[in-house]
Length: 235
Image 1 (tube, rainbow, N blue to C red):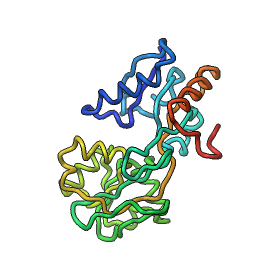
Image 2: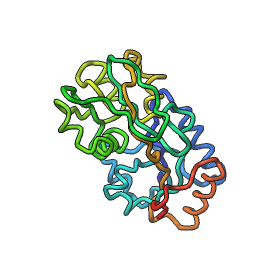
Image 3: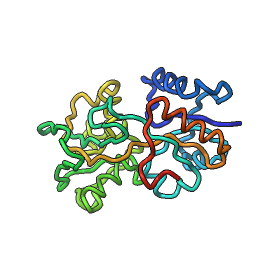
Image 4: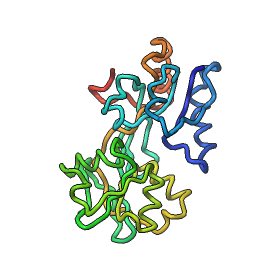
């Protein structure tokens, strides 16, 4: 049985938006499967499943080995979200207090000092929640901060900061938009910095997917307004 999912921004409150996104994508293929939610306790196994015909995956896990199982197809557009620009996205560094930091006018980062802070991260394979901060700082944020708190997800990081279990966390700009819309804990938080721009997470298919279908999906995504893959990551 072929599998399809759009798991990365599928909050319960935005389920209708996820279903509408999938309806646009599958409009040319009546035989593509309905969306199903992956088992997050074995998400790597899910992404390695040869029956996975369509999904999303962060460039973090892809760069750490999943690229051998998943073929990136195209980059969605992030322009609708503060901190997004075409295929590029930033992560917002959120905290409970401090002056709000506007989005930088250049692709460069604008990061706050982590000294003495507890840094909340969704996972060490996350580009938006950890690896981007590590790259921008040139050091592991867990070495610079007083402590690190692993939350398991961006929403969990928002709640951890709001509840005082963490002082600062990096949330990709689309997840931050969802949090501001749907997570009550986000209302008392402010953006105190931004990571540099990076390619947003791509749509993917299994490398076992029929090449003709993969090529057709890629072409259809471009027709829908998605962007080409970053140079050097086309394969």
